[in-house]
Length: 114
Image (tube, rainbow, N blue to C red; front, top):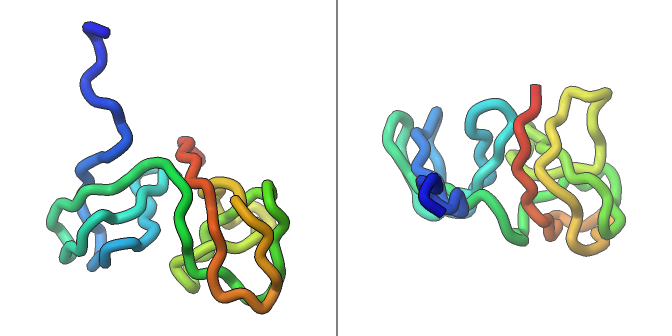
């Protein structure tokens, strides 16, 4: 393709706050990336835009495989609760996770959200 600039699988983004490798980070309007490396606030890092990752999960509820996964800012991880629309979609649960599970596998699906 003559008009493709880059594949978009990995983006260079500027850290709004300190970031550690593996962190789920919001970039722009509801697009989420997973940090490949650590970075301090104001510096650039590479963020992966898709794939299946293990993230911290809220232990207040379980999640079924295929259910929508939302960003839970309080744990910098995922939840099955949309918090009355306040939590943004990050993808879908790749595997069922029980309520007591502290982590969950999520297929990251980036999409612009208001």
